[in-house]
Amino acid sequence: MTDEVIPFPPPPLDVQERMVEALLFASAAPMTQRDLAARMPTGSDPAEALRLLGIRYAGRGVELVRVGDAWAFRTAADLGFLMQDEVVETRRLSRAATETLAIVAYHQPVTRAEIEEIRGVAVSRGTLDQLIEMGWVRLGRRRQTPGRPVTFVVTDSFLDHFGLGSTRDLPGLTELRAAGLLDSRPPLADAPGLAESAEDADILPGNEPGDDLFGD
Image (cartoon, rainbow, N blue to C red; front, side):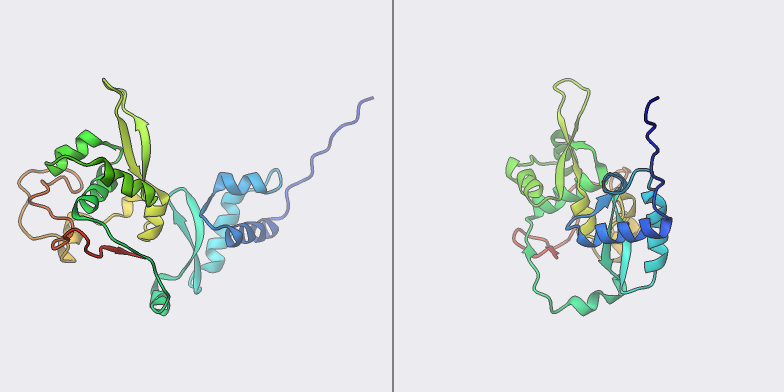
């Protein structure tokens, strides 16, 4: 007669909800469902726990938000003004870096050659290195084309910094023009996202090298 291992049932959902709450509160970075499941008892349902947690925190000063494929607690957007006196780190990007970042965000996965084709000028290695070092851009999969060029994509840190759940939440051309971030001239050629020439679609007009573009 062999000993039969009887698995323990997963904890009740209200307990799982508390577990997810504790894990997200203690984590310095957003956590995916896979991250949560790896730390929770076998048989737990982190997806349902996240759903319940989202309902519990809806409308509170701290809310549960999705960051790419991960989840985190963030200050409610309408209370952001309370944090104005906090000391923040200012990140300065050149015009080239700003345009490159926008192209990656709107056209990812995109190769260096494709970035240069859209901008109409060469992209220096330092520009992409800077964006990678900031944690806003990372290497993607290599293209299955001659030379197998590497592609570039934005990171969850980029989405988190700009309060985006995914790249689908990026503003369109109409929204950018309405906010005064693009001139109102019609594009010379139709293309998805921001696929206008760099000359005819300055992502942020007046953004000369060294301008303060992205502040935490």
